[in-house]
Amino acid sequence: MSCCITATLVHDDIIDKSAVRRGRPTVNDVWGEDKAVLFGDYLFAKAAQFCASTGNLRVIKLFSQTLAAISSGELNQAFDAFNLEQTHEHYLDRISNKTASLFVLATESGAILSQAPERSVKALRDYGYNLGIAFQIVDDILDFTGTEEELGKPLGSDLDQGTLTLPAMLLLERYPEDNPIKRFFQNWGELENKKQVIELIRDSPIVQECYDIAADYCAKACQNLNLLPDNGVSQVLMDLAGYIGTRRN
Image 1 (tube, one colour):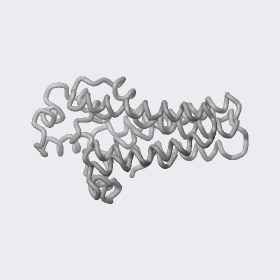
Image 2 (image 1 turned 90 degrees about the vertical axis):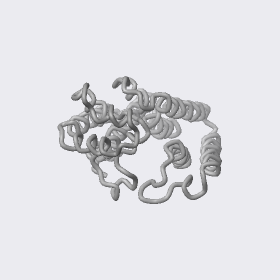
Image 3 (image 1 turned 180 degrees about the vertical axis):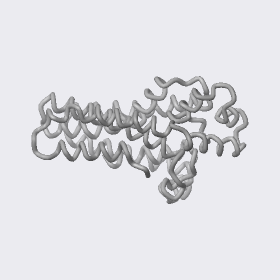
Image 4 (image 1 turned 180 degrees about the horizontal axis):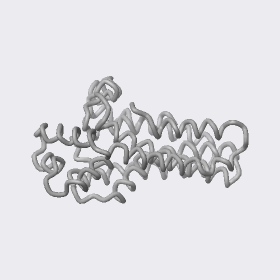
C-alpha cells in the first residue's frame, strides 16, 4: 500500500511541476521528470507485485480499479484546469477518484484479506471512502490557511494549477461577478490576485464551512463501525477520523 501511495505522490508532483513536498525536494526536482515518471511506474509495479502475492483475486481487482480511478481523477483535473464552470459534483467526483479511492483500497482490502464478514467489509469500505473525502477537503483548506513551513509547499498551489477546490468554489459563489479567482485565471501570474484569494478565504466563514463539511464526512465514516468486533479497533478508527477532520497542518 505504501508503494502505491508513494507512486501517486511522485506522479502528482510531476503533473503539478512541484519542486517541494513536505519541505523537501521532490523526485522530479532532484532527478528530472523523465526519471521521476519511471520511478513512479516502478513503485506502481512493486505495489502490483505485492498485491498479486496475496493470491486474492478480489483484492487484485480492487487494486487495478483503484489505479484506473486515480488516473481518471487526474485526467478530469487536467481537462478542467482553469475552468470556472465546475460544480460541487465535479469536485466530489474528482476527489473521490484521486484520494478516496486510495483510502478505500487500504480499508477494504485489509478487511478482505483478514477474511472479515461482508458487513464488516462494507463498513470499512464506507469508512475509507468518507475518510478520504474528509482528508482531501481539509487538505484543500490548508492550501489557503496553512503556512509554507507547515505545508512544505507554497500556499495556493492548487490555484497555480488552475484547480478549483471547495474553498475556492465557495468564494466564487459569494462573489460571482468581481472575483479575484476569475482575475487570476484570466491573467495567470498576477500574484496580487492570488494573494487576495488567500486573504478573502482566510478572513471569511468559508474555512469553518469547509471544516463542517469534512466533519460530516468523518461522522459518516464512523457511523457503521459498531458492526466491527469489539476489540478496540473501532475506537482507533474513530480517533483517526477525529484527527483528520480537525487537523491544522
